[in-house]
Image (cartoon, rainbow, N blue to C red):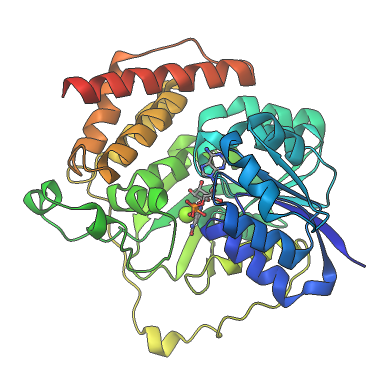
Amino acid sequence: MTRSISILGATGSVGEQTLDLIRRNRNEWQVEALTANCSVAKLAQMAREFGAKLAVVGDEACLPELREALAGSGIEAAGGRAALCEAASRPVDITVAAIVGCAGLGPVMAAIERGGTVALANKEALVSAGEVMTAAVARHGATLLPVDSEHNAIFQCLQGHRLSDVARITLTASGGPFRTWTQAQLDAATPEQAVAHPNWDMGAKISVDSATMMNKGLEYIEAHHLFPVGLDRLKIVVHPQSVIHSMVEYRDRSTLAQLGPSDMRVPIASCLAWPARMDTPMETLDLPAIGELSFFAPDEDRFPATRLAREAIEAGGAAPAILNAANEIAVSAFLGGQISFTRIAALVEDTVSRYTAAAPGTLAEVLEIDREARVRAEAMLENA
Ligand code: NAD
Ligand code: MG
């Protein structure tokens, strides 16, 4: 029996790895919609290869080029924000949400409102919307499967257990490419150095987030919403080998961990096949070759991002959405050579401390907070 799938952000790192798994099991899947922002050639090639019914570009200006690239294929082409949401709301067995940033929030909510199964990689959407998203999941009877490797690990370790029996959830962090760098070295870190992650091959934005540790900060907030055990039971430990993807300790002091290669195809496969299992092309885990696993406490003096994220989720309301928006602005300014590496966290801290808003109750309110926070963060960039 074939299953149908739509992939939002198909041309990105997670999207491509999802399609790699589909390609290996081609006759088991029917691809409905594939989306991108403006990578027309890549999107059109993917849509043709996988026989998608619909291809969508988020940037409407790229639609004529997409139409041309798909001419004669019979594949429907569409463009713009509303078209992304329309694609996300088409009925499928599973939607993979792999757009980067809060730009993915509208489409994710559209998939949730359909009551479907959503494999969520797009952590910024959940960080920004928080309870607005988790309430929509409950209201529409949707199923959220975490793709993020840590949350996928926790999800697996929780199967068959009660959240009320959990004593502690520990998110592991690789520490990123600058884990051992001094403050002076961090001040001079370049975008090229930041996107070269030691363990994972990822998109530019999440690579910078890994280097600042904001990725772990966003994941801390993500974990709080997915697994509501209370912030005092949610910890972060630095584990440079990225072999243990996260752990759950129960009240009897038994700890369950999920291990695997640092390849996103493992957690993606776990979501695609859930609750069953499927093959992946990875080698089996060779523990003697890995040799040793090590663990360190996070250093929030050199990497303040996890502290900022914890403070934002403790403050609640609009704070996580503001933190996320400011971080998106700061990361693109850093990638564009406009600010230094250590200014990223400073800009986020400044934005969160100077802009407060009432807790959002609807998607429109979340999007308005996100928009306003971007304006404020941009203004601080100009004045820096
Ligand atoms: P990426 O930059 O490689 O790909 C992003 C995708 O989103 C592309 O298809 C791009 O066209 C699309 N996109 C970008 N901006 C858009 C916009 N404004 N409107 C519509 N589409 C847009 O990113 P990635 O590394 O694949 O990450 C995707 C998401 O998954 C992020 O939220 C990231 O945090 C999360 N994630 C990624 C990894 C990883 O290994 N790459 C691991 C865990 C979680
Ligand atoms: Mg992760």
